[in-house]
Image 1 (cartoon, helix red, strand yellow):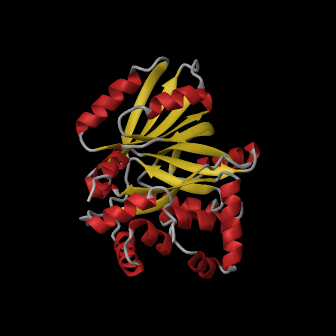
Image 2: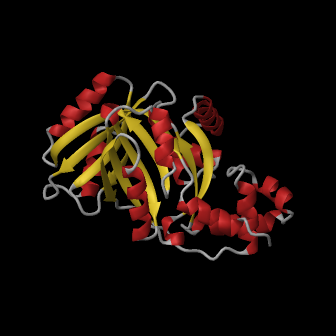
Image 3: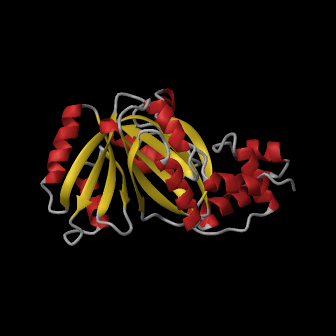
Length: 300
């Protein structure tokens, strides 16, 4: 994967309905080249699925990032699936040192109490830490019957053409185009992808960083990663209260994991840095998905 592939992936994460032509203009290569790159990303399993979701603002939910320490007796795949059964969990992953990370949605304190009790009760769990993380909220939007009809069709293929949507919904192309524009511009509906960074030869890993928050803001730290490890860096999850952050990166070799880890340890913003390599991960429906299905699944 090169910087153009990564740029295309990031654009699809933001809006998977972006056109080949728009991507062509942005990245300076032909639309056919864009199409081929996306097909390669699909064939390699890096793009595993195209998805639709509500923004967190749509249903007033927040995110937490969790770290589970276990005794190492678990089967990675089986335990990730058990974590995924927890209330609101949308992603979970197994890492080296018998550590599991997860992201979950919650709408109230009771959700967190239920999730924490469930996870602490799993066999082999020795410690559980849950961090509220800083995230973009998005907006609320009142969905019309046309919006709901279109979203129901797009569940199977979020990148479906306007002509295809019009045929399946029996709406005019003009009405479909107008409603889609409203959905895409609303910041209430997200058209995105599920991506599997370890599907090809890449090695995904997490840097678990305790920060010196007086030296740099979280946004400045994220910018440092973008500037110094732009190809490797993917996401940073910043704890809302504790001086803590989790940074997701991918590299080609374990030697690069060590090099980046050493580089981060030299920075003034890092108190401690622990690198853990991913062995398995999966995605799960969460609260936003359930609420979306409840709303758009209603008959007109």
